[in-house]
Length: 110
Length: 117
Image (tube, rainbow over all chains, first blue to last red; front, side, top):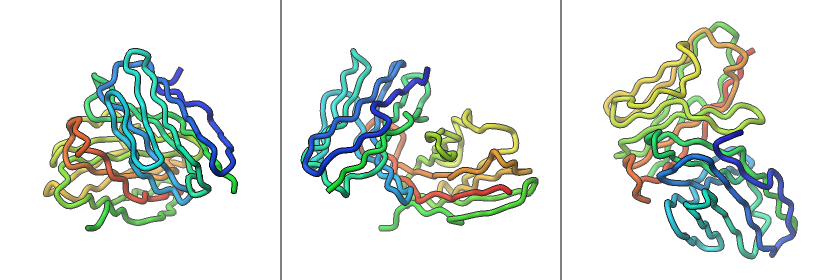
């Protein structure tokens, strides 16, 4: 079992839909990251959080430390949101290294 | 300002040859990370630098892989005697520091696609 599990692996939505991507992890962590990887391969860091909730534009990330679970929400989805979304954790014992989930391929159709 | 840059963007090499991949982090960023993304697989950590020292090189898959960082800036990842399983996209990231502050988010370079024939 991977230390970081994401669901779903693939997600197709219609423009305007509310989207949720889930991430569960099995180790104690100091921080969790959500990353976005575009079709061309470029990776952008969306959020780094260790508790609670963060919001940036139409993106919201939440984390529940007790349940070892995080969610990434996209409101009013748009075709330009189509990308792979990756969850990554910094464990309490591994310093700065990140352990990554397999990613969720999101496709938003117009 | 400029983001993280990597060179070359693509590298095709023959099995058994050595390759060097370069990463130029954002100016002033003290932390630098190397990751690898094999085809159809997730990202995996290779090595982390704080300044010129590498406190965590636990992700390097074999002793054919090495990395150095000089002057607290540019880093080079070297793969000796390349094998076909080394084919992957090699990504570099940098951050201002390595603590948990949101100021230390990682900025990724565009990657080097390595193909070993």
